[in-house]
Structure formats: C-alpha cells, structure tokens
Image 1 (cartoon, rainbow, N blue to C red):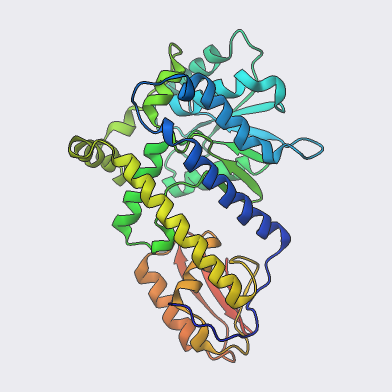
Image 2: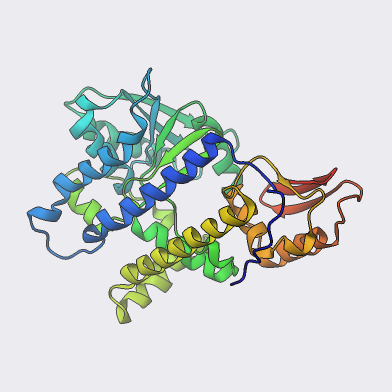
Length: 361
C-alpha cells in the first residue's frame, strides 16, 4: 500500500459543490464508457446501436442531470461546422422540443480564409433549415496570432456566461489526448482521455459523444454537408496533427481496434483513481479537491507525493513531471513556518505557500 494509515488532521474539507461535481463526473464517466462502447466501432449496426436513435439518446442522458433547475440552464453548443459539432447540433434539434432553448456559438480564429468561415456558417444554417434556427452567435478572435493556449482561454472566457456548454469531441480526440500525455510523461492518475464532463470558470462542459467514433458521426450526419478544416491534415502544425494523421493511421494498420484498447486503459485509470480517492478520503477525511491544501502543523512525512499530484491536477494544473518534482521538493522542504513562496506549474498555474497553507491558482 503506497498510502500510510496514520491518522492526522484533515488537510482540507471539500465544499458540497465540489463533492457533487466529483460524484457527477464519476457517474457520467462510467455511463459514457459503458453505454457508448457499441458505438466506438465502425462495424455495421443493427437496431440496438443505430446511431440515429442512440446519439440523441446519449445527448438527452448527458443533459438530464442538469435540467432539474429553475430557471432552466443557459445552454450553448460550440459549433465549428465540422462533422462532430454538427452531429451534436443535429441530435439536439431532433429532441429540442423537450430541451431548453439553445445558443449556437461559432468562433472565427482568423487563421483561415474568410471563405472557410462563410462555409462553416453555411453548413450550420443548412442543417437547421427548415427548423427554426437556434440563436446563432459568431465571435471573432481579437488577435489573429493567438497561440492555441490563448485561443482556448478566449473561447472559455466567451462561454463562461453559459451554465452548460456542449462540445462535439469524439473518440479519436480522446485517444489522441492519451497518446500526447504518454509523450509528456504525465502521472498515471492523469493518463485518461478527454473527460465527458468538466467544470471551467463555473461552467459545466458536456461532451456527449466522447466515446463515439468519427465514422459513426459521419454516418449519422449523412446526407448533410459539413466543413473540413484543412489545417487539421497538416502534420507540420502541431503534435496532435502528427498523432492524428500519421501515428494513429499507421497504428491502426497493425492494430485495428486500437481505440477500444485505449478505452480499456481509460477504464483501468478510472478504477485506479476511484480506489486512490477512497484511500485519500479515508486517510484525510475528505475527497480530493477544495479551496486549500492545509499543511500547518502536519507531519510532513505523511504528505505523500501521489496525493499532492492528484490535488494539483484536480485543480486544473497539468505540470510536466520535471516541474512537479521541483515543486514537490520545495513542499517537502517546507516546515510550516517558512516564508511565503510561489512556484510556477506551467499553463498559467502556480502553487503558493503562505502561513501553513498550499494552494493552486
């Protein structure tokens, strides 16, 4: 057992909302992994896994836990005009009478010709006719040379005014993320793909089709027109494109069900995380999360490395192993009475120590 069992004062107490978020995330993750496994293959479909019925069902099941509030949540769908987000929009339109009003949000990053942006919007409007078009908002990047990180921050800032945001991520996106994490040497606790549910800036992000293959989405969208971002096929533009267009393509040639096997890895990681979090709960008296990691007066030999890394990642930081090891070394040197210090975790996150408390910001 890698966790010591000596009892001591709990380092934090999670808020009710944190506990609910953790519970909802775990429940939804199990649901998606089990209920979409049949859709992760491009084989022929029978009535049981017909995408025309199962994709709308996946959408309504993912939304249902969040629709019990009054007034109903403000829902946005981030739509690029590609096959994944248009499939999500098509599924929403098919069940829209039973769902709250939808706002479709399109982002123009100014990285492609104006004609490409116009084609995106054309695909969206074609899909929605003759149905009444949901509210469509388009946002243009304030700066065409945004880095991917800054562009992501800009989109999240725009979407923070909504309660729920739907995104069209699919199975290959998740597998690509797992492979990229392997390359970065992340913690085993973080070796999962894209989560079906996440919470950013007070907004809940839902990815109903995260365990559905892109081939299934293409089949579902027929004969509707969708947009293809040509830059996604350029291997020179980022590691993800290389993973998508070369590594995974060659890997599938010798291992045709590679997505399923990464799905198995996903389940193993989730089971380990669940076991680990139960150990943390029993040892510290509270679930991972909360507003601060209290260390004042603690036996520093009992603050184990894996628990602290889990806390850091739960707060949203994803430091490399080298960066985390430097921070961990500093934590172990802290005696509870030292001066205030701050260390960088990367990606605009930092860990701060002051008056016996550690917190990630």
